[in-house]
Image (cartoon, rainbow, N blue to C red; front, side, top):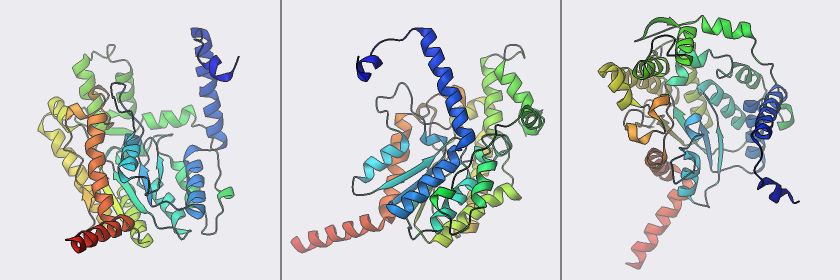
Length: 350
């Protein structure tokens, strides 16, 4: 039986379960030997030194997901790449809770090469709030620190590291951290326990959603300190690189959040984006353009408002990708030169 025909044979449930468990353990082992964020850095460095792309797209988890109900299953970065066309090459590096401090390390690697691609980068509120900054896995602290320690003459072979999984003690410390939102003076663990078992804690579906949206989007982004300065350092790194940049705000489900928490939800989202935008411009320049896409997407443009995430469905991805592509096209030298040539030829023909 050929490999392809074996794949067509339905497997019993117990086989599928064993395969799923096997894949899970294999991925955990791989992460300990070759961390995904470090592996992405190695692949980026290799690409920049051997086949530099026109565009480098650094992204968060909004790049990773599509809706099961979507007819168009292309991820956001694929939509952007397809719209730019085959003459524009693009390298994409994205993942869950990727954040400015990690992006800065990727940009530092770019600085060790002669490549200066146009950079697309999101400005995401949630990854600058405490539960994601301090998360033992999704804070990406070990990978960020390892990459920061690499020198200017690093080779791709040296960009390799694995890290042990966080211990139960690490998660216990994380769960004890205070996370103050509209839900009150709760710890991270209070949110997690109640969201994992809402019925036991007296929460109906609306109560669960209110708590979830408070946990995801009710945190205050500080306007000073190390974590906001990471945004400024990213902007400064982009300025030092001297490359063109398209920055956009990762959309927040403001409409649904406001249904649950009232006007304070939109007010906080607007305030948090303003703080992040200001920190970014403090590094890159006061006139740095940021696509104001953070609070303008409706509930119908997100994959599932019940999970409180920033993940867009086909309708939302279409709209966001159009804005990103328009900004990239204005800035990308090859596209700008082509447009000017086309206009010159048109005027000559006239």
